[in-house]
Amino acid sequence: MARAATTSDVFNAVADLHRRQILDALITGEKSVGTLVGDLAMAQPQVSKHLRVLSEVGLVRSRPEGRYRLYRLSPEKLRPLHAWVGKYEQAINDRLDRIDDYLHHLQRQGNGSDT
Amino acid sequence: MTPDRHGSAVITFPSDLEVVITRQFDAPIALVFDVLTRPEHVRHWGATPPDEMTECLIDLRVGGSYRSSFVTGDGTVFAFHGTYLEVEPPNRTVQTWHFNCWPDVEAVETMELHEADAVTTFTWSLAFADQAGRDHMTKFDGRQDSLDAIENTLRSLLNPKPA
Image (cartoon, rainbow over all chains, first blue to last red; front, side, top):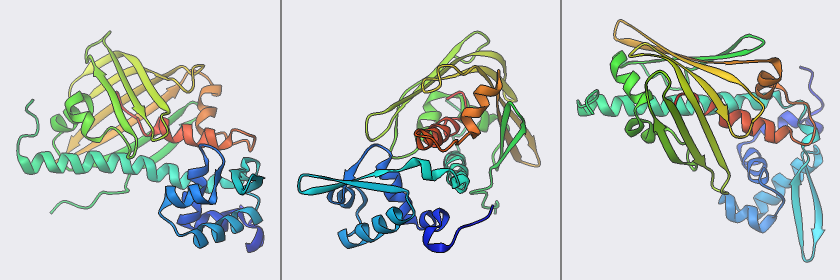
């Protein structure tokens, strides 16, 4: 898949774990910087910096609300995000890895297939 | 020492109507089958943190039903239910699959286990009744609900078994 220049590259924008966490946090609705700081255990300057990058590539939009600014997802820009499938694959693996860990746990205990 | 198999799941889309996931476990087939089909085991691994598994009912016999529910941090409920069509411990179960977020989708879920050389291979497949069903899995059309679609795809695949 062809990629745009870095400054407008959605893939680049979501390559950063913290920016993905911000996008994930915005799935449930628009939020202020302060709310994101509280949700994500990230410092406010860091959240603001990442929001600026996400805004520049069009993944996030904002509007003023009283004394605050609220940020929301701009999902029409997600078309190129088949890379997001990587997350989907990771999530499937996480679940199966939990089964794996649990099986190891049971076998170490040696009481596996009883009730 | 057994190998570290973390992250080794293989996900394929063998047809327009099907998604298949395979994964190997270093455990005997009977134990893997129990872990996948007994509620007291499923509750240990079923939910993806921070989600919580709030319901896990499994009546493992042909004609029996299963039901599982999950609640996310923001209170969203994801629920799955269906009826067992085939039950062949420890090798195979086949069941209908309904997901509350996709009420229009008809699907059949198949879980198969094979053991060789002390390694059990788990194959999970979901076969949709029509293309519209599988499009839920793969179609990110860039419109207003793209993120929802991705998230729902995640949720659905995260609960792949008769949990």
